[in-house]
Length: 68
Image (tube, rainbow, N blue to C red; front, side, top):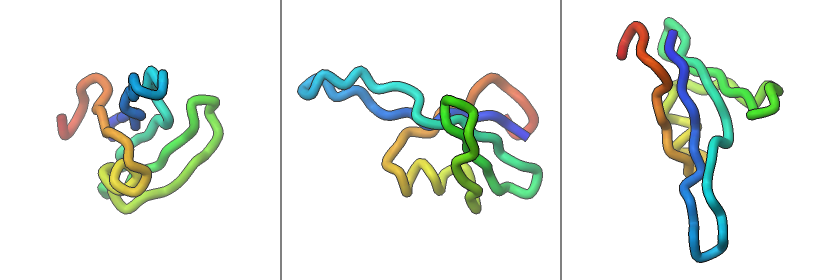
């Protein structure tokens, strides 16, 4: 299992500093689960890349772990 964050890119034109939108975990079978920054469940995904693509966010791995 490995942790990741989904980040919203900064948009200086609109005064948006960007930041973390969701946290997630890659499960042993390759699927992923995400939660909000407030700790509420968000979604289950077929891969870690899927929510990033679907939501237009950047995936960033947190720390190191198996599969790093």
